Amino acid sequence: MDVKSNSLAILSLILNAVFITYYLELVPAQVPTEQHKQLSLERSNQHDLQENTKDSRGDLFGTDVLHGYYQKLISQGLSAEQTKPLIFAKLKHQYIATITKPNDQFWKHQPLAQLDYMESLSTGYKRVREKLVSIYGSTILDDPLVTDIFYPMSTQYPFLSSSEQIAVQSMQLEMQRYAVSVQSQGGDVNSRSADRSPQKMLANVLDDRGLKEYQLRTSPMANKMRQSGVEFSETSFRKAYDILLRLNSARDSQVVFSARDDLNDLLGDESGLTLWAAIDPVYSLIKRVASKHDVNDGQALYAYELVLVAKKEVSEAAQQRDSDPQQTVYIVQEILTNLKNQLTEMVGEPAANDFINLVNGRQRPSPIRR
Image (cartoon, rainbow, N blue to C red; front, side):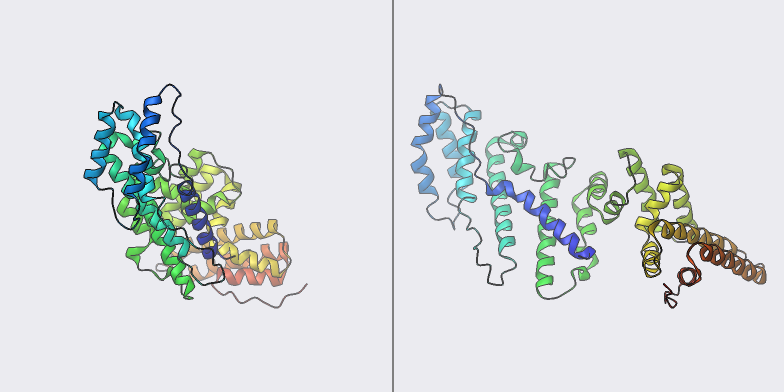
C-alpha cells in the first residue's frame, strides 16, 4: 500500500472511531429509586416525545417549544440538573434517532453512503449542542452527561477546545468526502488547491499552539519520526520536530547541514543518522540500489552516511568556486574519488558506482554482478 492510500486508510479509521460513540444509544443516568417523582415525569412525557418527532424531516422541536418543555419540568418540581437527562433524551430522539442509517447494499457503487450518514450525524449533534446551550448556557459544555458531543475528538486531541475539536472533525469529514469522491472517479487526491489543503484549513480554525500540537500527532513528518526506530522522550521528540521544521524554509544547503548537526547533538550520531535517513528521500534510493546489489541494511546506512559527508564536503568546496574555480574542481574530484574508494572497499565497485551516481544526480544503475 503506498503512502497516499495508507494516509486515507488511517484517516478513515480515525473518523470511524470519532463517530462510533454516536451510533450507540446514550441512556440517561439511572434515576435513584427514591426519585419517584422524576421517574414518573419521564414516563408522563413519553407521549409528548413521540408527538414531537412523528415527522423526522421537520424541526418540530423549535427553541420556544423546547423552552416550554423545560419550564414545564421545572414547574413540576424538578431542578435544572434533574431536567438535563430528559432534555438530552428528547433532543437525541428528535435529531439523532430519526436519521436514516446507510443501507447495506454492498453490491452497489455508493462510495458516499457511509459518509453521508456521518455528516448527517454531525449536523444532528450540532443541533443538539445549540439547543442545550440555549437552555443551560455555556456551562453545559463540561457536563459529564454531554461532554462527548461537545468534545467529539477528546480521545485523539484533548488539547483542543470544544470549538476547535468540532472544527477539526468537520475539516476531516470534508477531506474524506473529497478523497472518496476523487478516488471513485480515478483522480488524484493531491490535486486540491492550496487553499483547500489540510494545512491551510487547519490554520484557519486552530491557533498556533493548537496547530502545532495537532501536527505533532498527525503530520507525515511526525509519523516518519515515530516509525524511524529512534527512541524519543516527549522533550526530544518536540525538539527534533522543531529542528526538522527548519527544512521547510531552507533556502540553501547550509541550513540543511546545520539541522543535521543539531539532530546529532540532540540524539547522538547514530540516532541522528537513523532519523535523518527516515525523512530523507535519498536514503530510499540508497536502499533500492543496495537491494539490487545484495547490500545489507547496515552497509546501506553506512554508505548513506559516507554520501552525506561527501555532499557536505562538496558543498563547502563549491563556496570557493568564484575565487578559485580550478582548485574547486580538483577538490570535488578528490572528494568523489575518496568516496568511491571507500564504497568500493565496502560493497564492491558496481554498487559503489551506483551510489556515486546518486551523489551526482544520476540514478541509472550499472550492470549488477551477483
